[in-house]
Image (cartoon, one colour):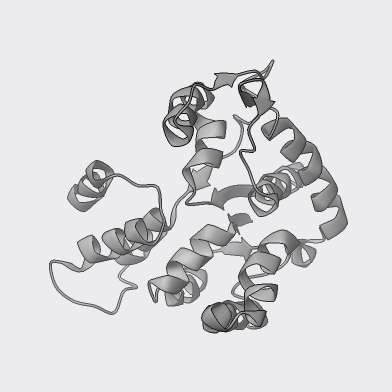
Length: 224
């Protein structure tokens, strides 16, 4: 069994682009579980359900959960409280990773870090998994932590320094963006649009809806 763990941003990105239906198509064509944590569910369904501007998107994602396209960790015998507890430990480490003027910089949210905690629990059960996350900071923390000094310095417009003793703490996680998800759906013939501009339009939609993907990366995917 394999699993894709969805962060809030990826689901919101697909919802904004009218692309949530690709999850239905991918689920039917792949032997894979699509899982969200309790913290992610709160961000994409529970909280926005009470906000007029975001209610429609929440209903769309709720429909995926009701139809078991998206599932909770309990579907795999995992405990939400355990995931939340492990997430708190990871959040403490992540948010004590870099400093600016002697103060710690908050790098991750509860929902993002809960995805990492769920990944750990799935790995313990021998379930291969990947995390669908569009936000750049969490991915950089895991894939290229040494780059955080430059990225966060540019973002905060002041010098930051890595203060963590072990920069490889988060190196074991694997990631995918909404851009790669729509690319996979396109290559499998699961997109009901025709024309030479379809892939480009899909990738640009994910970029402008929040995926941290460069124009150069989009051009590479277009050539593959």
